[in-house]
Length: 429
Image (cartoon, rainbow, N blue to C red; front, side, top):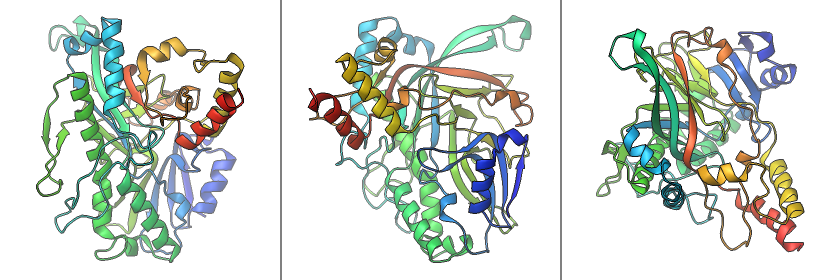
């Protein structure tokens, strides 16, 4: 049985311990962090850091999430530029519409496919153009506000006070590359390959596929930030995408924070692969930011000097919890929302409809004659609550800054579920 480590026994309920024991091998090691769990929606492990033996066969495919290297990227926005939108309700509403319209989403049309292809040329560059955008129901991008403490006189801690700050934040995955990679990994593991055999040069999926997918989500997020900034009329720093296809150079945002989850990498000098299941891999991430539920936003960690470039060292393989515990599946939430819409004879049956309409927008599949607040805003997840373990997780010297949503585009309800809700509400009437 795999070795399971934890900060406290409460982090590993019996159901999770049993699932990990069945999924992992005797040579594997697991570090379970606060909020570790198995998702009700995807059955993927969350907030669990794994060391998987590289040469032993019989790796259970259920260990890996299909959201390879998904994560969050953020860029700091000048206060004056951000508050232009927030001081005028009509300007804010128009900016929200532009943002939702500008970002493509697989949730709005079956014809949209986002993210680069997994296969590239001999230099690991694209061999075709691709579209950036939302690849899952959990994606979002937009302007977030925060209250940060710093001094008006640099270095004088006695003059610290609270200042307003703003960030352009995106949460998204690798799209087509991640989906293709997951399919190939599962096929290789089902053939009995070890991890070393899966990712050897010339193998299938092979080393190039791992390199390509490791950057796919970061590139997708960086392009979404450029698209969002353009839609809002914000100026951000950009650089050329060195992996673009010949003759088609994309621009990527220069991010202040960029974290990835579901990362897989081989450890130097050891026959071990490190897999950050639903958690942030501190060794490969720039800065530290964790996800709360959609309405609460994100939690950003800042150094004493205001720096966002932080390092993370802890006993959980230098990882940090990212996901909060899911309370209900999207299917259950869509059924609940549809019932409320039908009972109130309104598509705005959400108890917090006015607040949501002011801050969130989405692009749903057209032609159904019905729309609804996406399930992510119906209480799908608990808010973040792991900070009481900050010292044990290596966060003792950092401050937590909460990023609250102001103008945010999110993924719409999945088309199949929205269609079922429409039949229940509109069809019945």
